[in-house]
Image (cartoon, rainbow, N blue to C red; front, side):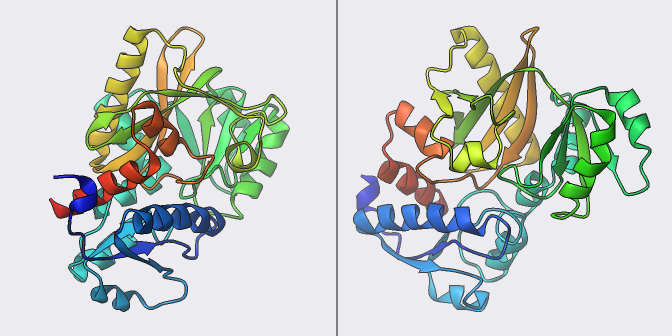
Length: 306
């Protein structure tokens, strides 16, 4: 049976929301909505910022394209569970864990998944001590944000506190993470399998793969084939799928990783509702695997029938 002939019923495409990533979610969601409608699916836009979530009971299933808190962190998944509406992607626990960079790292470290060392930062932190323990450079991140929001690279000890204060505008919990010098990759996971790995190469003016490099810049390079040897690509894919499973994530998602100068892989974070814009990595990896955008969204939606 082809994906286009499946009976999905009335589908709510959830996008927009109230997080700092609303702007990106609106673009992602519109792309998903258009693809589903073009495929003949009875899909409608549903913005939780504008409609009470109780109205979701009118639908047969939900395609979640809400990025950030309120959509990717388990709260929306919990609401849909209570309303008995099938939905795309990971469940409550994996969504909450994936949105929490600190707890994801703690879980991965406990399971032996390679991830950079880190320290939690507060207003009372001895920032010089953190630098002494972790070294420089450091990456400072809000624990519960995505799309590189609130992130800064720190190369001098005196810049750590300002980076913390900048990140604290977006979240109550901030981490500093050891900087991995090397190449950055992403592994898209769809239905339990890793798609072809993509190498991310932002222009040197960005310093790292920040918000502008992700969504606005035209000078970011995306390499697929990624340039790794076949053995190394398979190794990274296996590590990523294992880490995805360890978090309990299901359906679809993305693992971001680095390869250091010694050839070791380090996993940075998991994304359980990745972007679906024209700059996004999931559609790019899907194309490399032979799936056009419409087939991709139908494949993701079909998982709600299981």
